[in-house]
Image 1 (tube, rainbow, N blue to C red):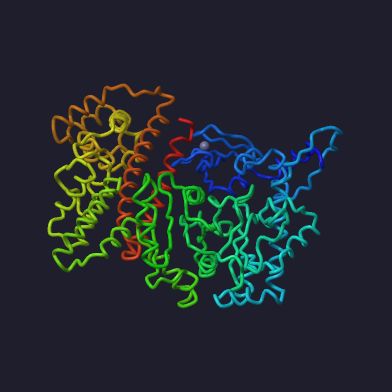
Image 2: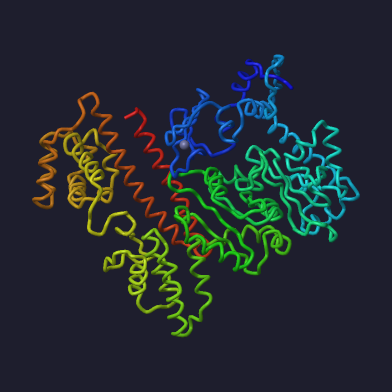
Length: 633
Ligand SMILES: [Zn+2]
């Protein structure tokens, strides 16, 4: 048994394995300014990224949970490896041959030291062996035929690394033993099973899909039954959980899909291995599938980290279902739990009950892309599905449909969305009184009935409905004081506030009094051209519409600005930028609500336009934030 790794080799690994590249294999990182990158922390659950990576220093740190370290400790912690195992894993990744110190006589043997590395190596060798069998062995003909019948040629099989497990009970075991692996290792890896102490190949006479982790290493297999006399009835068998295979987290195809998922802010979850293949070959490169288990929280966490994170907006997760029944069951589950991500969850249903693999065979690649493009928001789908059980042409049917669906809508937690769907529900059912439906939903949800409806769904002016302002007009005091600070500098130092202030529309101010003053500044000619001083104050007073506004001008003209002359330009810039950012954030909320109300299948053009606007606005906000933080203000 070898001893500890030489220090200079550890140093070489640390140098060659760039922290941003390695961490970037596990989660999507985005620029955070100053050469740093950030993403969603894999070590605690979070909605906004506080996990920072500094490539220059080779370090990572999470401001959310306080974890941090270098590239080795990241892999160690993420994959739950020992220090040595993490170094070995990284060395393999970056191509460094490790050398070990001689073990001192009498030192404790390190039995577990290399286990993970060995299991990964065994899988690598097994995958290669199985793939050769599929390509060359006469026995594998049924496997090749299976693929052929589903429209997958040799290139496709090779691209996905598909293999064939021979029917004999120990073909793989003998092959791997010749390569130096022990029976213990093969059993621990899940490649061999054991009966009465005798190990035998776990997979026999089956078609195999290698399942890879985020780093692209094979850690297990999914195996399809091929023969009628297979003593194992299950159509699919999977590797059991092992030190390197955790079915609750693994997603088939994620190694191929992760870049596309980040790039397109979309992940498509399909049900089977052949569906992943069909989607990728059809041009939906964001498809993944769970491996012998249903989609759970851990899977969602993995995808959320890969989805290019736009602060609160997290892209789409689209679930495909063959037929309504499975989709309906899944959709109804969306009403449970905390619903935090449900706004970004969509379903794509193939009406004829075909899965993506069958669909591609029957109707071609375009049909698969079309299936994904026709996705519907999850709530939309769920409510429509329940409605489908009723005859909406009869008054009795409409009454019963409402009785059944009002409680469903009432379970939506986001109240803006809940009102929105209540209104939609009224339209879908053909109820005569929209307000009555909204009131029923609100009453059942235990929400106060504010007595009036917010704007209609397709109102060109969202008005106050999505700005996050309570109807009674209370504005967050921090927002009020920011608005005041911005107006204070506009009154006292118009030249400094300048064009950046003039770019703020009146609607950037929530307080009616401040909004009026903003309009007054505009009427007086705007900040950009003003020298300031008493002439400017006089111009403002002259342009003010009423005494209340003149009063505010007077107050703001004498209130001290909290910055000395030297810091003043930076202070002015930072408050103006900050208000810009708050304003953009508010517009984002509106846009997101509108996006959620827009059905991508029915209003494709509008949806794509909104989506584009949203991404652009996210970028704008990020830029503002970065500029605002630029000097460490
Ligand atoms: Zn964290």
